[in-house]
Structures are given as structure tokens and as C-alpha cells.
Length: 277
Image 1 (spheres, rainbow, N blue to C red):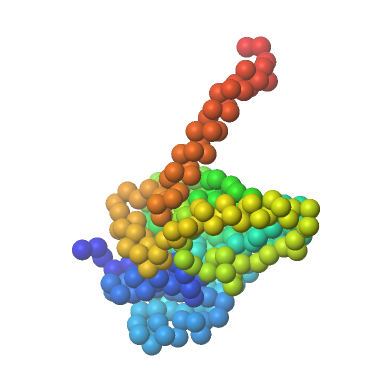
Image 2 (image 1 turned 180 degrees about the vertical axis):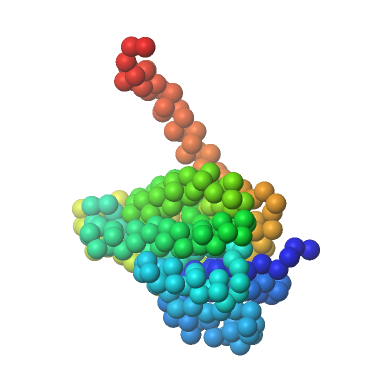
């Protein structure tokens, strides 16, 4: 039996964030749950009372991120698990992206997670423990057409988090990148945004959508993922990266085998670039 933990979860109004908050609360943990609209958390407050602290937060607001984390720490006295879950998918081929669309995607998925992480670190360092969980994606290590700017946001999250894991290990802080495949969440539904379509890509768009339908033919169950996240946060030595769902491992293996094959094939060019020793 593990000791009760205090969680800070962004994007707790729906999807993974909500299911994980419920799982934590049901086992007696405390949760600071953020949402743009805290009324979406009213039923959880009614059910779990003082064990949940609802916080209104738009993660793109740097100062609000720091204030929310500080409020959660002051309210509960400590933070054990910090989950950067808030995010959305933007759909558009690279040529179709507007500057505003690209910046909005990066501001939420990358900078939002960065600001919350920075806000939490002083508290975790002081207590000499903690676990930061970044909700990435199979799209954080692989890439597909139509969601290029989403991939950019998640590849950035992967990069700074891998560096962070090394920077904070001596303080007793763990970092885990959760990389889900397709799940029955609202990621590609109402919470998604879309670029104006360029007719030049009409044929390729149809082909791309068929490929997406094939990859996501058997989406995972967000409720089932709650048991998985509990195992991760309770682990003595949690992983830096972990896939959620059955599809990502096969995608990753195929992608990385192709990368290594290409690097080896073109290694003579790599050696040429090195110059004479």
C-alpha cells in the first residue's frame, strides 16, 4: 500500500486528465485539478469534497501557471505528482498553417507544459521528491501528415523533458513521458482545431484520412488508462518513456528501424562531413 499522494493535473475537465483525477481521488489521494471552465469539475467536488481543489487555468498564461501551482502547494502542503495533460490537436498540412495557428499549438502543448514544470520544480526540489508526467504521444517520436505542428509541439516536449530528467535526478525527482496511441478522447473532436484546406492537397488529404482511420481502428479506453497511470506513479523507478495502448510499439519499431537503415546507408556522407582526422 502506497502513501497518499497529492496530484496537480492540467486539463482535468475531460479525457485522460479527468479519468486520472478520478482514479487518484477514489483511492484516497488529493488532486488539484485545473480546467479552463471549473464547472466541468463540479460533480467531482460534490463527490470527493475537500480532496479535490478545482483551479481555473489557461496553461498558455505563464503567470497564472505559477500562481496555480503555488496555490495548490499552499492548499495541500506538498506536491507529489505533476501531470501536464492540457493540450489539443491541430489539423492542417504544413503549407496550410497560419502563424496564429502554429503559435497557439506551441503555446499550449509545449510552453504550457514548460511553465507548469518550471513552477513545480522549486517545490519538488525542496521536498527532495516528486514525479513530473508529461503527456506526449506516439506523435512525440514519430510523425504523420496533417498534424505536423502538433508533432512539433510534442517533439519539443520530448526534448526538454529528456534533458530535464537528467537535470533533476539528483534531487529525487522523476520524469516520465507518457506516449499514447489513439484513444477515445476528445483530442480530435470538439477540442481540435483545423486549418483552412488548400484544394491542391485534396487527393492526398483523402489518402491521409484513410491512413488515420486504419491506425485508429481500435482506440484505447481512457478509463482503462487510469490503472496504467497509477502503476507508473507508484513505481520505485518509473520509466522515462512509456507507451499507452497497443499500437505505438509497432509504429515506433518500424520508424526507428527505417531511421537506422537510412543513417547507416548514408554514413559515408557522415564520415565525409567529419573531415580528415
